Image (cartoon, rainbow, N blue to C red; front, side, top):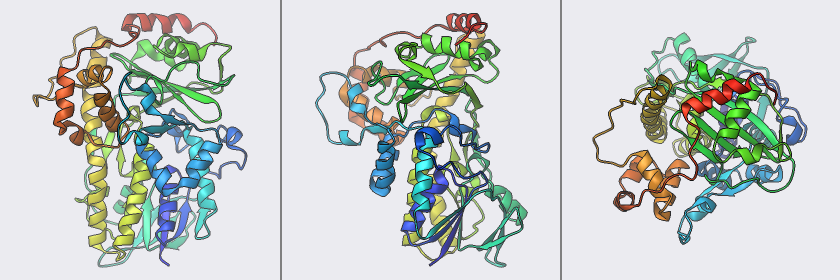
Amino acid sequence: MPTAVIAGGSVAGLASALALAGAGYRVLVLERAPEPPRWPTTDAASPWKRPTVPQGLQSHTLTSLGVRVLRERAPKVLAAAEAAGAPVLDLTRAAPAGGAMQPGDGDLVALGCRRSTLEILLHRAVRELPQALLRHDTTVIGLELRPGDRRVEAVLTGTGERLPADVVVDATGRRALSRRWLHRAGVPVAADLTAPAGLVGHTRFYRLKGAGLPGPLDRGHGVGDVHGHYAGVLHPGDSGTFSVALGSLPGDEALRGLRTRPGFTAAARATPGLAAWLEPGVSSPVSPVRVIAAPPNTLRGAAGPEQVPVPGLFQVGDAACLTNPLFGRGISLALEHAFRLADLLAERPSIDAGQRLAAARMTYGLFLPWYEQAAASDRLRIARWRAAVDGAEATVPLPSSGLPSSEEIVRAARADGTVWRRFTRMLMTLTTPAELFADEEFLALVRQAPATPAAAPPPGRGELVRLVAAAEGGRA
C-alpha cells in the first residue's frame, strides 16, 4: 500500500486524507496546530486555537459544489454536520416568484456551517479511518528527492525526522510551503499569477435565541450583498449560529470603526436585511469582531504545468489557488480538488513526471476560471469602492465583449427564474463563467428582462461613515 504524507490538517488536508484513503493509500497527516478539543461541536469550535488559520474564524459558506462533493464522496461528514445543527439550505426559495421547478434544482443547496465545525467533523472522520494517522504539533520543513528524476522520497520535519513518502500533498493553505521546500531542494519555482483582492473582512458571530429565522434569506444561503462601496452579508451557521461579515477597502480609515463592536453593529444594522437578526431579543453576539486582510487572488505556478516536475508532489486547495473569500468558493473548491486528485492518482498510479503533469493540468483546469473571474470582478469592485471613498466617478474601462455586466444580470435575475437559476449555478460553483456566457438563451433573457430595482437601497457612503463614527463611543 503506497504512503501519502499530507502537510496541513485543515479542510484541504483532511479532505485529501479521506480521498486518498479511499483510493488505497496509507495516509499520514502532519498538522502544526494542536489537536481540536474532543467536545461537542457546539462547544469545541470556538476555543480551538489555530494561529496559522486566521480565516478559520471568519464567515464562511459551503456552496452547492461543496455540498455535492460531501453528498457523493463523504456522506457521513454531511450527515454529521446536519446532526450538529448545520442546515442544508434550499436556494430556490430565493428564486423569483411564479417560476416552475426545473431540472437541476435539487443541486441548488448550500450548507450553513461554521468552518471550525466542518473542520472538526472532517478531523473526526479521518481519525476513524484505519489506514490514516493524524499527528499534531508537527511541521514539514523540506523534502528529500531522489537524485536524477527528483521524485519525492521523504518529508523532513522540524524535529529532524525523516518520514518516507510515495506521495506528498501540500495542504498548507495560503502559505503554500511547497514553494519553500522546492527552493531548498534546488528546484526552480514557477511564477504565480496574482491580482489584488482589495478587501478587509470584519466578522462577528451570533446565536439565535429562538427557533426559526428572523427574516428571509434573500440570497438563498444568506442575506445582504456586495454594495457600491462596501459589502454586508449574513450567513446562517450550525447550532443556531449565524455570522455577519462586513467588507471594506484596505486603508479606508473612515471605516476603521468597523473593527469596534459599536461601529460594526451600527453598520450591520444599517445594511438591508440584517437589522431584524440583530435585535436584542432575537440574537446575542458570541464572538468579538475579528478582522482579516484578504490575500491577493493567486494561482500558484508551483501547482501548474509550467512547474519543473517533482513526481509525487501535489498542491491542493489554497496551496494551489487563492480567490477572494468574498466569493465564498474556497472550501468547496478545496473539497472538489482533493477528490479529483485522488481519482487521478488512482487512474494513473505510476508516480512519474507524466502523472505530475496530468495533475497540474487538472488543477489549472479547475482553478483558472475562478481565478480569472475573481481577478476581473475584484478589479472593477476595487475601482468603484475607491471612487466612493474618494468622492469621484469610477473610471474602469468595461470589457468590449458585448456581454452583459454583473449589474444587468442581477437585475434580470430578480424578475426571471431561468436567469436566476443559471446565474446562481455559477455563483454556487456548479458551472463556470465561460459556460454561463456561452449560453445564448441566458444572454437573450438578460437583454430582454425588465429592470427590477433592489428591494431596499444600502446606506450611502457618507451615511455609513457617519453611523460608524457616531457609534464608536457607545456599547454593543
